[in-house]
Length: 192
Image: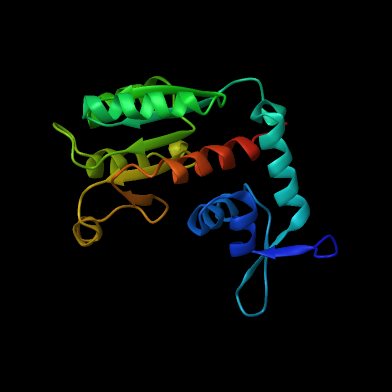
């Protein structure tokens, strides 16, 4: 396989041990360079996949810009808050985790310091995730903040109520494999 220069998205996903959707998102957010064939298929340089693998093996700190990735989790369930905290800390990545119990608290925390990535539930007391996300996306200075939604809400209902197009939505149970892929993608795309 040494003479192959490019991989399909699926081949890259297998090589990285990530889902196809995570690799597609990594391509979309610039964490993995790719080009598009005339037929619309993405091709990812093998060198980019190998570089990401070697960074993971050598520790993510190899491309850490000095400060940890700032992650804000908007989740009202204390059990899920603890699950997020324990699981993500167990990955031993340079990530600073902040937790907010509802949309209002999340907006306050974003106002104090915008995170690199926001993971939000949609069904929260007070201000729900829909209103919180629409409020955040109305502020141009926050347009670079990535937002993931993790919700038990029916996908049709989510589509009916509407979210900005750049928000990635996952169902519950919490897809930690996907979240880890997003974190690795963010960390690999930071300035060195």
